[in-house]
Amino acid sequence: MNPIFLMSLLLGLTIGQAMSFCAPIEYIIHVEKRECAYCLAINTTICAGFCMTRDSNGKKLLLKSALSQDVCTYKDVMYRTVLLPGCPRHTTPYYSYPVAMSCKCGKCNTDYSDCIHETVRTNYCTKPQKRYNL
Image 1: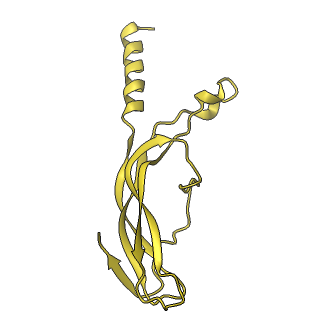
Image 2: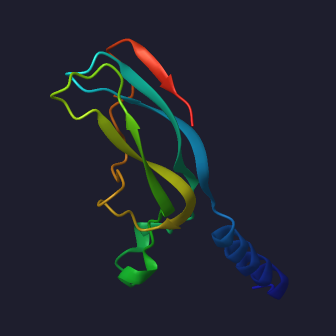
Image 3: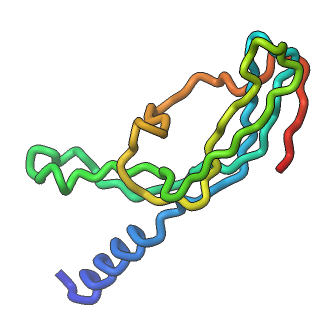
């Protein structure tokens, strides 16, 4: 194999792994409680983007550590709490949500991330909407 081709291939793989496009992006979540009169649209940031993965077609030939299926996930996250409008006194009117400060490519942690491939679209309001801006 041509040494220049081989070096180019190795350099491309190294740069590709380092240049994964995983970063915080703006996102609007819709939050409502059955007891409260309004739905709240909250501007926040989530982690999204592309992470390099390795093809698992050769899984019988490779070690498990070589089969990397990384996802774009939180590196640093903080939680904010908002007061939901129109809630009766007997209801807890607070809602806490994550704000992505920085992201990384890594294993999906189900403690704080939704790790399924496809999700059902449920991010909408069924009640009158109010917007919450930071």
